[in-house]
Amino acid sequence: MKAVFSNNYLEQSGFVKQCIENFDSKGKILAEGRNEIRIFENDAEQYNIKSFRIPNTVNKIAYRFFRKSKAQRSFEYASILEKKGIGTPAPVAYFENPSSVFFRESFYVCRHLQAHLTFRELVTDLDFPDHENILRAFTRFTYELHQKNIQFLDHSPGNTLIVKTGSTYEFFLVDLNRMNFKELNFEERMQNFSRLTPKRIMVKIMANEYAGFINKSEEEVFEKMWFYTEQFQHKFQRKKALKKKIKFWKR
Image (cartoon, rainbow, N blue to C red; front, side, top):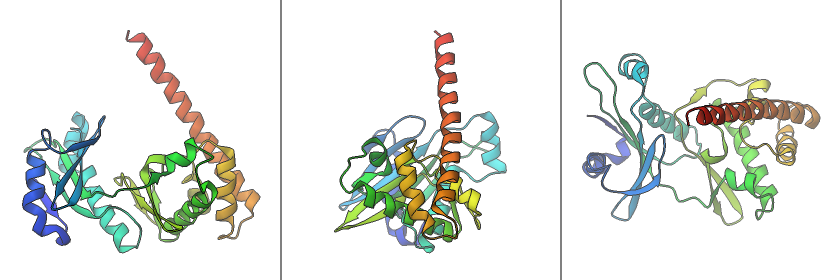
């Protein structure tokens, strides 16, 4: 199995390799589903290991010969974020298990970060303590991403961990395998908010905060943010309804 480590964690390579070898039988399950995440502990340090499912037949070939795996991209993008001063759990290593013809499973390893909340709590509870201040701080964080030429394509409610330190909030990106690094225009910046929340009041607050940093009126910023939000929600609900129909007809 191919293994690539961060220079900062070479001393932990033996332990991490054992975790990969025993992934299915050890560790604490954090998330299950399409991919699986487990937490492993060594000398009071916790490591977060994400196992990516074996891809379909087309991607088995694509990832073997033509494309970087999700694990490799997660590791490389985390390293780029660190260099740019953007929060993300520290990258440790990635593992790939290809055959001579097909790509099989892969793993991404990072330090485990114990967060106080994610953006999702802000969406589900408008009365969450200090809600508006957190939302405005998050908007400033997103503006910083844009200014540093980072387009986080999975900028969605569960993919930003939030840590409170005193009266301030720090933000850390996870699920990193889909990113672009380029200068973003106004439309791309506004579209980057589309997956976060369907709640108009939250979009209004984010638009108000973001408009203070660019040469656009609050009205224009909100109009674009809300346009892309509605567009995304329409596609999301249509896809959800289609899945229900398919599930019904499979009975």
